[in-house]
Amino acid sequence: MKKILIVALAAVFCAAFTFAGCSASNGSSASQSAAASQSAQDDQILAVKGEITEITVNGDTTSVTVSNGSEDAAYQTLVLNITEDTPIEINGKTDDYDDGMLKTGDSVEAYLSSNSPVTASEPPIATPNRVVVISQGAASSAAVQTEYEGTITEITKDGENVILYVQEDETADPADDVNAVVSGETIIVSETSGSNLTADDLQVGQKITVTTNGVATFSIPPQVSAQSIAIHDAQTK
Image (cartoon, one colour):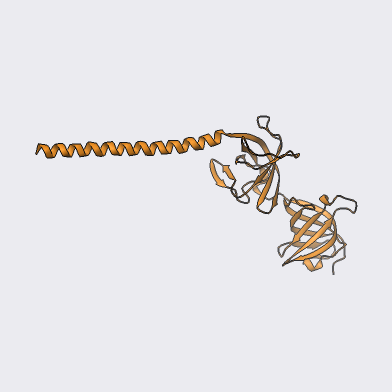
């Protein structure tokens, strides 16, 4: 009987030490993981801290201009090339970037690793390791509209859409012109012919105002999505 009791106690002690060893091992792994994560963040520098003043989209990359930067950061103005893999922290929660997460007027901090490449352009351009939204500005509650005024000089078909080349002035720089994409959702009105117009009513030579959501490509001229178009003359069909 004593032998059986001794064997049972030995088994209990052995199991206890084994469990303790496993717990220590798991705790050690978790600690190492947390330490590695903290070390990765410690390696990051505050590149810019300021307000988002412009957002443009070019393919899979969203370029966010952060201006009015804090003197505590490395740059006063920096263009951030953000992809769907860029971590964005909002209200303490971090997710990969998705359209609409960042908006003009937001106050943000952007971090780079110590060896992240930064262009020598003005303003400089870099791909951030992470972006932290400090506060969301008033402009973040709705899309920021931008208007372009000019004359239609070319109309081309692009599938179900129509692309208008809108020239600001004959002597202006092409960067001041715009390619406006007109879709079935674009509202088209005329000062003389009223509303309920379609893309078929748009003609070369018309003076128009194109209203967009503020998003434009980096191309020259930039390409925008036309939310509405106002025709200022009577050249509709």
